Image 1 (cartoon, rainbow, N blue to C red):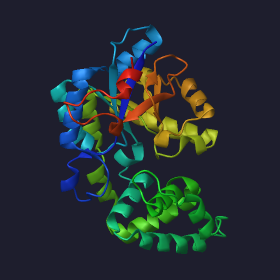
Image 2 (image 1 turned 60 degrees about the vertical axis):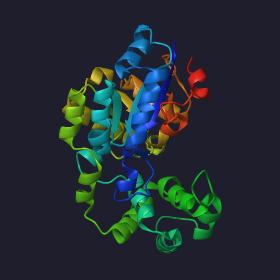
Image 3 (image 1 turned 180 degrees about the horizontal axis):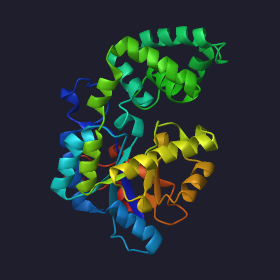
Length: 324
Protein backbone atom coordinates (compact mmCIF):
# COMPACT_ATOMS: atom_id res chain seq x y z
CA UNK A 1 0.00 0.00 0.00
CA UNK A 2 1.19 3.53 -0.85
CA UNK A 3 0.05 6.96 0.22
CA UNK A 4 -0.62 9.38 -2.60
CA UNK A 5 -1.26 13.11 -2.78
CA UNK A 6 -4.45 13.74 -4.76
CA UNK A 7 -5.02 17.41 -5.50
CA UNK A 8 -8.47 18.89 -6.09
CA UNK A 9 -9.14 21.80 -8.45
CA UNK A 10 -12.28 23.67 -9.56
CA UNK A 11 -11.99 26.99 -11.42
CA UNK A 12 -8.63 27.53 -13.16
CA UNK A 13 -8.59 30.69 -15.26
CA UNK A 14 -7.33 34.25 -15.50
CA UNK A 15 -9.55 35.29 -12.61
CA UNK A 16 -8.81 39.01 -12.73
CA UNK A 17 -9.74 39.21 -16.42
CA UNK A 18 -12.94 37.14 -16.11
CA UNK A 19 -16.47 38.49 -16.14
CA UNK A 20 -16.91 37.63 -12.44
CA UNK A 21 -13.49 38.19 -10.80
CA UNK A 22 -15.01 37.83 -7.32
CA UNK A 23 -15.48 34.10 -7.91
CA UNK A 24 -12.61 32.27 -6.26
CA UNK A 25 -10.35 30.10 -8.35
CA UNK A 26 -6.75 29.49 -9.31
CA UNK A 27 -5.01 31.91 -11.64
CA UNK A 28 -3.60 30.28 -14.78
CA UNK A 29 -0.07 31.49 -14.04
CA UNK A 30 -0.23 30.05 -10.51
CA UNK A 31 -1.48 26.71 -11.87
CA UNK A 32 1.53 26.57 -14.15
CA UNK A 33 3.83 27.42 -11.21
CA UNK A 34 2.20 24.72 -9.09
CA UNK A 35 2.80 22.13 -11.79
CA UNK A 36 6.46 23.15 -11.93
CA UNK A 37 6.66 22.77 -8.15
CA UNK A 38 4.99 19.36 -8.26
CA UNK A 39 7.20 18.17 -11.10
CA UNK A 40 10.26 19.15 -9.07
CA UNK A 41 9.23 17.40 -5.84
CA UNK A 42 6.64 14.75 -6.72
CA UNK A 43 6.02 12.02 -9.30
CA UNK A 44 2.90 12.41 -11.41
CA UNK A 45 0.80 9.25 -11.84
CA UNK A 46 -2.38 8.40 -13.73
CA UNK A 47 -5.70 7.25 -12.35
CA UNK A 48 -5.22 3.92 -14.10
CA UNK A 49 -1.90 3.44 -12.30
CA UNK A 50 -3.57 4.15 -8.96
CA UNK A 51 -6.28 1.58 -9.78
CA UNK A 52 -3.54 -0.90 -10.67
CA UNK A 53 -1.82 -0.17 -7.37
CA UNK A 54 -5.00 -0.75 -5.35
CA UNK A 55 -6.17 -3.92 -7.07
CA UNK A 56 -3.06 -5.48 -8.64
CA UNK A 57 -0.24 -4.46 -6.27
CA UNK A 58 1.38 -2.19 -8.86
CA UNK A 59 4.13 -0.23 -7.12
CA UNK A 60 3.69 3.51 -7.39
CA UNK A 61 6.75 5.77 -7.18
CA UNK A 62 7.41 7.57 -3.90
CA UNK A 63 5.82 11.00 -3.61
CA UNK A 64 3.10 10.13 -6.12
CA UNK A 65 0.65 12.89 -7.02
CA UNK A 66 -2.63 12.75 -8.97
CA UNK A 67 -4.54 15.80 -10.24
CA UNK A 68 -8.36 15.92 -10.13
CA UNK A 69 -10.75 18.58 -11.46
CA UNK A 70 -14.39 18.78 -10.38
CA UNK A 71 -17.60 20.16 -11.92
CA UNK A 72 -16.89 20.13 -15.65
CA UNK A 73 -15.94 23.76 -16.24
CA UNK A 74 -14.90 24.94 -19.68
CA UNK A 75 -11.73 26.20 -17.93
CA UNK A 76 -10.66 22.57 -17.85
CA UNK A 77 -10.59 22.41 -21.64
CA UNK A 78 -9.47 25.92 -22.51
CA UNK A 79 -6.87 26.42 -19.76
CA UNK A 80 -6.03 23.16 -17.98
CA UNK A 81 -5.98 20.61 -20.81
CA UNK A 82 -3.32 22.28 -22.99
CA UNK A 83 -1.07 22.93 -19.99
CA UNK A 84 -1.36 19.31 -18.84
CA UNK A 85 -0.47 18.15 -22.34
CA UNK A 86 2.53 20.47 -22.32
CA UNK A 87 3.72 18.96 -19.02
CA UNK A 88 2.75 15.43 -20.17
CA UNK A 89 0.56 14.96 -17.12
CA UNK A 90 -2.84 13.26 -16.87
CA UNK A 91 -5.74 15.01 -15.15
CA UNK A 92 -8.89 13.28 -13.89
CA UNK A 93 -12.06 15.28 -14.62
CA UNK A 94 -15.32 14.68 -12.76
CA UNK A 95 -18.33 15.71 -14.80
CA UNK A 96 -21.89 16.52 -13.57
CA UNK A 97 -24.01 15.34 -16.49
CA UNK A 98 -26.81 17.90 -16.51
CA UNK A 99 -24.32 20.76 -16.77
CA UNK A 100 -22.50 19.35 -19.78
CA UNK A 101 -25.10 17.37 -21.71
CA UNK A 102 -28.28 19.25 -20.81
CA UNK A 103 -26.89 22.80 -20.39
CA UNK A 104 -28.39 23.24 -16.95
CA UNK A 105 -26.66 25.26 -14.25
CA UNK A 106 -25.65 23.54 -11.02
CA UNK A 107 -27.16 25.14 -7.93
CA UNK A 108 -23.70 25.50 -6.39
CA UNK A 109 -22.64 27.63 -9.38
CA UNK A 110 -25.84 29.66 -9.33
CA UNK A 111 -25.00 30.56 -5.74
CA UNK A 112 -21.45 31.53 -6.76
CA UNK A 113 -22.76 33.91 -9.41
CA UNK A 114 -25.51 35.35 -7.21
CA UNK A 115 -22.88 36.26 -4.61
CA UNK A 116 -20.54 37.63 -7.28
CA UNK A 117 -23.28 39.81 -8.78
CA UNK A 118 -24.40 41.60 -5.61
CA UNK A 119 -22.01 43.94 -3.85
CA UNK A 120 -24.15 44.32 -0.72
CA UNK A 121 -24.84 40.78 0.53
CA UNK A 122 -27.47 42.16 2.92
CA UNK A 123 -29.76 42.59 -0.11
CA UNK A 124 -29.59 38.85 -0.82
CA UNK A 125 -30.38 38.15 2.84
CA UNK A 126 -33.41 40.44 2.70
CA UNK A 127 -34.68 38.46 -0.31
CA UNK A 128 -34.00 35.15 1.42
CA UNK A 129 -35.92 36.28 4.50
CA UNK A 130 -38.90 37.13 2.32
CA UNK A 131 -38.75 33.79 0.50
CA UNK A 132 -38.43 31.77 3.71
CA UNK A 133 -41.55 33.42 5.04
CA UNK A 134 -43.29 32.90 1.70
CA UNK A 135 -42.57 29.14 1.63
CA UNK A 136 -42.49 28.55 5.38
CA UNK A 137 -45.75 26.65 5.74
CA UNK A 138 -45.72 24.96 2.33
CA UNK A 139 -42.32 23.37 3.05
CA UNK A 140 -42.53 23.24 6.85
CA UNK A 141 -39.61 25.62 7.36
CA UNK A 142 -38.33 27.24 10.53
CA UNK A 143 -38.48 31.02 10.76
CA UNK A 144 -35.69 33.13 9.30
CA UNK A 145 -34.12 33.99 12.69
CA UNK A 146 -33.65 30.29 13.47
CA UNK A 147 -31.60 29.74 10.32
CA UNK A 148 -29.61 32.96 10.66
CA UNK A 149 -28.63 32.28 14.26
CA UNK A 150 -27.62 28.73 13.37
CA UNK A 151 -25.66 29.39 10.18
CA UNK A 152 -24.31 32.96 10.17
CA UNK A 153 -20.82 32.32 11.53
CA UNK A 154 -17.70 33.84 9.98
CA UNK A 155 -15.45 31.10 8.58
CA UNK A 156 -12.07 31.21 6.86
CA UNK A 157 -12.15 34.09 4.37
CA UNK A 158 -15.95 34.51 4.23
CA UNK A 159 -18.10 36.86 6.28
CA UNK A 160 -20.94 35.56 8.44
CA UNK A 161 -23.42 36.85 5.85
CA UNK A 162 -21.79 34.94 2.99
CA UNK A 163 -21.51 31.76 5.07
CA UNK A 164 -25.20 32.03 5.94
CA UNK A 165 -26.19 32.30 2.27
CA UNK A 166 -23.94 29.41 1.23
CA UNK A 167 -24.90 27.02 4.02
CA UNK A 168 -28.62 27.75 3.82
CA UNK A 169 -28.81 27.31 0.05
CA UNK A 170 -26.29 24.48 -0.32
CA UNK A 171 -27.03 22.29 2.69
CA UNK A 172 -29.59 23.35 5.25
CA UNK A 173 -32.85 23.48 3.30
CA UNK A 174 -34.42 20.49 1.56
CA UNK A 175 -33.57 20.09 -2.13
CA UNK A 176 -36.96 21.16 -3.52
CA UNK A 177 -37.32 24.47 -1.68
CA UNK A 178 -33.59 25.18 -1.87
CA UNK A 179 -33.66 24.86 -5.64
CA UNK A 180 -36.74 27.07 -5.91
CA UNK A 181 -35.17 29.88 -3.86
CA UNK A 182 -31.86 29.67 -5.77
CA UNK A 183 -33.69 29.86 -9.10
CA UNK A 184 -35.61 32.97 -8.02
CA UNK A 185 -32.45 34.73 -6.84
CA UNK A 186 -30.47 33.69 -9.94
CA UNK A 187 -33.16 35.03 -12.27
CA UNK A 188 -33.39 38.29 -10.33
CA UNK A 189 -29.69 39.08 -10.09
CA UNK A 190 -28.21 37.54 -13.24
CA UNK A 191 -31.03 38.17 -15.74
CA UNK A 192 -29.52 35.77 -18.26
CA UNK A 193 -30.69 32.80 -20.26
CA UNK A 194 -29.67 29.84 -18.09
CA UNK A 195 -29.00 27.48 -20.99
CA UNK A 196 -26.77 29.97 -22.81
CA UNK A 197 -24.97 30.82 -19.59
CA UNK A 198 -24.36 27.10 -18.95
CA UNK A 199 -22.89 26.68 -22.43
CA UNK A 200 -20.35 29.39 -21.58
CA UNK A 201 -19.51 27.94 -18.16
CA UNK A 202 -19.27 24.19 -18.72
CA UNK A 203 -17.58 21.77 -21.08
CA UNK A 204 -19.32 20.53 -24.20
CA UNK A 205 -19.61 16.83 -25.00
CA UNK A 206 -17.15 17.23 -27.88
CA UNK A 207 -14.63 18.81 -25.54
CA UNK A 208 -15.04 15.95 -23.06
CA UNK A 209 -14.41 13.42 -25.84
CA UNK A 210 -11.36 15.35 -27.05
CA UNK A 211 -9.90 15.39 -23.54
CA UNK A 212 -10.55 11.66 -23.13
CA UNK A 213 -8.87 10.95 -26.47
CA UNK A 214 -6.00 13.17 -25.35
CA UNK A 215 -5.23 10.85 -22.44
CA UNK A 216 -7.28 12.48 -19.68
CA UNK A 217 -9.43 10.42 -17.30
CA UNK A 218 -13.15 11.25 -17.18
CA UNK A 219 -15.11 10.21 -14.10
CA UNK A 220 -18.50 10.25 -12.39
CA UNK A 221 -19.78 13.29 -10.50
CA UNK A 222 -23.46 12.39 -10.64
CA UNK A 223 -26.19 13.77 -12.86
CA UNK A 224 -27.58 16.62 -10.74
CA UNK A 225 -24.61 17.23 -8.41
CA UNK A 226 -26.85 16.36 -5.46
CA UNK A 227 -25.59 15.44 -2.00
CA UNK A 228 -25.34 11.67 -2.46
CA UNK A 229 -25.62 10.92 1.25
CA UNK A 230 -28.99 12.72 1.41
CA UNK A 231 -30.65 10.77 -1.40
CA UNK A 232 -32.90 7.77 -0.92
CA UNK A 233 -31.35 4.50 -2.18
CA UNK A 234 -33.43 4.42 -5.37
CA UNK A 235 -32.71 8.12 -6.05
CA UNK A 236 -28.99 7.57 -5.59
CA UNK A 237 -29.00 4.61 -7.96
CA UNK A 238 -30.70 6.70 -10.64
CA UNK A 239 -28.18 9.50 -10.07
CA UNK A 240 -25.25 7.10 -10.52
CA UNK A 241 -26.77 5.19 -13.45
CA UNK A 242 -27.44 8.39 -15.40
CA UNK A 243 -23.82 9.37 -14.92
CA UNK A 244 -22.54 5.95 -15.99
CA UNK A 245 -24.71 6.08 -19.11
CA UNK A 246 -23.14 9.44 -19.95
CA UNK A 247 -19.62 8.12 -19.41
CA UNK A 248 -20.40 5.18 -21.69
CA UNK A 249 -21.64 7.57 -24.38
CA UNK A 250 -18.39 9.55 -24.08
CA UNK A 251 -16.32 6.40 -24.61
CA UNK A 252 -15.05 5.90 -21.03
CA UNK A 253 -13.80 2.44 -20.05
CA UNK A 254 -16.54 1.55 -17.56
CA UNK A 255 -14.54 -1.40 -16.23
CA UNK A 256 -12.27 1.22 -14.62
CA UNK A 257 -14.77 3.93 -13.66
CA UNK A 258 -14.09 6.29 -10.79
CA UNK A 259 -16.06 8.95 -8.93
CA UNK A 260 -15.71 12.15 -6.94
CA UNK A 261 -18.40 12.73 -4.33
CA UNK A 262 -20.31 15.99 -4.94
CA UNK A 263 -19.62 18.18 -1.88
CA UNK A 264 -17.69 15.21 -0.47
CA UNK A 265 -21.03 13.56 0.32
CA UNK A 266 -19.96 10.01 1.14
CA UNK A 267 -21.49 7.61 3.66
CA UNK A 268 -21.44 3.88 4.37
CA UNK A 269 -24.60 3.44 2.30
CA UNK A 270 -23.20 5.39 -0.65
CA UNK A 271 -19.92 3.49 -0.50
CA UNK A 272 -21.82 0.19 -0.48
CA UNK A 273 -23.72 1.10 -3.66
CA UNK A 274 -20.53 2.22 -5.41
CA UNK A 275 -18.89 -1.10 -4.58
CA UNK A 276 -21.92 -2.98 -5.91
CA UNK A 277 -21.58 -1.03 -9.15
CA UNK A 278 -17.85 -1.84 -9.28
CA UNK A 279 -16.55 1.69 -8.84
CA UNK A 280 -12.77 1.43 -8.66
CA UNK A 281 -11.85 4.65 -6.84
CA UNK A 282 -13.87 7.45 -5.23
CA UNK A 283 -12.53 10.74 -3.94
CA UNK A 284 -13.83 12.71 -0.98
CA UNK A 285 -13.14 16.33 0.01
CA UNK A 286 -11.51 15.29 3.28
CA UNK A 287 -8.19 17.11 3.42
CA UNK A 288 -5.69 14.28 3.68
CA UNK A 289 -3.34 12.12 1.67
CA UNK A 290 -5.07 9.13 0.07
CA UNK A 291 -4.55 5.54 1.13
CA UNK A 292 -4.27 3.03 -1.71
CA UNK A 293 -5.75 0.00 0.06
CA UNK A 294 -8.91 -1.71 -1.22
CA UNK A 295 -10.61 -0.77 2.06
CA UNK A 296 -9.86 2.92 1.48
CA UNK A 297 -10.32 2.96 -2.28
CA UNK A 298 -13.77 4.60 -2.13
CA UNK A 299 -12.93 7.14 0.56
CA UNK A 300 -9.71 8.61 -0.80
CA UNK A 301 -8.80 11.98 0.68
CA UNK A 302 -7.65 14.93 -1.38
CA UNK A 303 -5.62 18.08 -0.86
CA UNK A 304 -6.98 21.39 -2.07
CA UNK A 305 -4.83 23.36 -4.47
CA UNK A 306 -4.39 25.87 -1.62
CA UNK A 307 -2.59 23.20 0.44
CA UNK A 308 0.20 23.05 -2.15
CA UNK A 309 2.73 25.84 -2.90
CA UNK A 310 2.08 27.90 -6.03
CA UNK A 311 5.65 29.00 -6.52
CA UNK A 312 8.02 26.56 -8.22
CA UNK A 313 10.88 27.72 -6.00
CA UNK A 314 9.16 27.10 -2.65
CA UNK A 315 10.23 24.28 -0.38
CA UNK A 316 7.86 21.32 0.20
CA UNK A 317 5.45 21.68 3.12
CA UNK A 318 4.09 19.17 5.66
CA UNK A 319 1.94 17.35 3.10
CA UNK A 320 5.10 16.26 1.31
CA UNK A 321 6.23 14.38 4.42
CA UNK A 322 2.80 12.89 5.02
CA UNK A 323 2.81 11.25 1.60
CA UNK A 324 6.07 9.36 2.17
